[in-house]
Length: 318
Length: 166
Image (cartoon, rainbow over all chains, first blue to last red; front, side):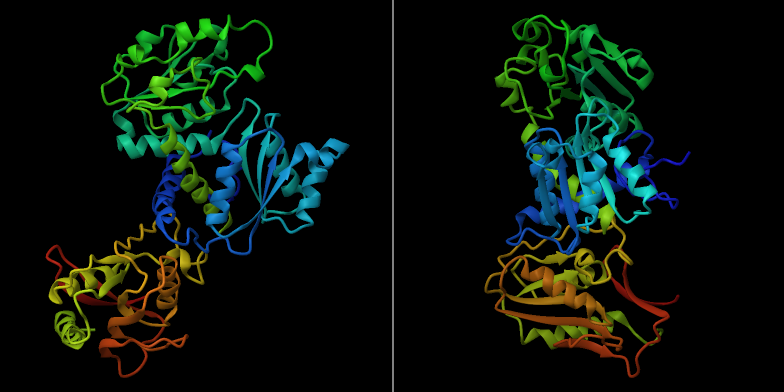
């Protein structure tokens, strides 16, 4: 079966997941993003690439950073952006996801940016569009359930490339709640595709998916051991809202064992960078001194996220 | 284009521009040939404003059908555009659409006092009301659309013009 994200010419039609995307496409997205970082320095922070296109932000789950950066990215490309606050829209009156989509198509939508608590919801929309012959409409997954958050994975790769240049010489650690994290899945997929020779996953057994080794990672259950000599530390947010059952003791105890402190970070390479997709739980997965420290690149990640989302949108719809 | 000596045309262009530039004149080269030419002009005219460069791919009216994403370079305007005297530099002037795109992009950086255009060769076939203020050579008859005329450079910045039959 063809990758449902690609056209028959192998070009990006939708962005649903980084799984199965070839290295050339990931690299092309990062290369396309590069000149977009300069737009922020202009008096008029806009490029005319998506002039006249209508982009609908469909967020069925709360988000501030991701929705805002998607909105800024679309506006910097001169698109018209409509934000649907789905919790106060017709969905709350019982309208189905696909009926919502059909209505927005009737409003001449060119692109949907979708976040949904259910894994596969953006894919469902692409199948529905294809069944209706609407191959001119594009879908970007802005996070679905535990499945994927591809633009976060891409902006993380952009950040790593910016600070470390060559992926093929790196040891990268993904630390924390991998089980509930769509971000971790996108990160691991992108890191392995881009040729990072050692991807480590550091987490307690209760916060790891079954057979995580099959993703091509080395698993550590001891944070100190796992952080030794790494070039990049990618922290994950502890996702309390997605947890059911007693996977964890208290947040305080989690911090003691799994929180990133200066003392633990000292085990990584001296020029290691610290990343976090946000929102941070200070004093749970990361210590404030580290989050605000010289090795943290957490705010640059946000800025690069705009350029990366501009790149994806322009590659899909230009 | 055996008869077009790019280095001789370059010297001609320098002489045309010399009396019309001051130390504050800013040059902006259009990627890629225009940037090479602008680098040489900047040196020959002893200008003090840092040299600018723009990639107009995203401002083209045929973007999406022609431009390749991922191949665009970063635009760099290292001087204050507001009130500046700017000369846009391109190697070959053809339909005028690239110049139109460059003007639009330039104005996103500010409001220049004056903008001019300098090119090495005018190959004719204009599709927009655009004319160069400085032009080293105008072809006597428009070149056929099937042909591409482009500037090349070597490691020493030496310029040559190449004709490609597409």
